[in-house]
Length: 150
View 1 (cartoon, one colour):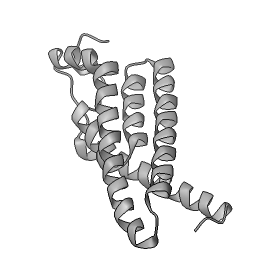
View 2 (cartoon, rainbow, N blue to C red):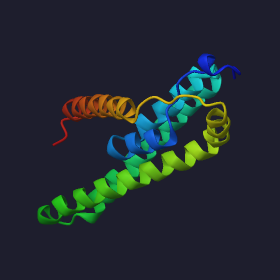
View 3 (cartoon, rainbow, N blue to C red):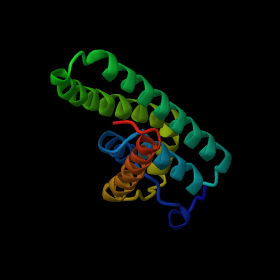
């Protein structure tokens, strides 16, 4: 990591990663972790982190989908189960992202703060999260139409 403050890249803070993950998805949080590693020149670790984030998101999505299918016994319960599942899923994803960020990049943030490094704005992280959510929604709609799921 460079020693001059002007040479330090901007990173996404743990708060930004947590907020983007809670409101958008674990894919957004994983991408922000990826972007931090990539900005620091740790390309191999960046791609491992991104791939792991996608796999964990896929597993969580699958578990939540199965839980919704088994929890809703009739259509009147389906709406309540979906709301509960969305809230539980958002909290679970945010917890996973913050714990992973602390584990993977926590010491790096400490050093970065000591060197007075600058962070990207939380709004930028949130915008990236919204873009990830939009792409995910479009992919899910495409998959649903492909498999004729209603």
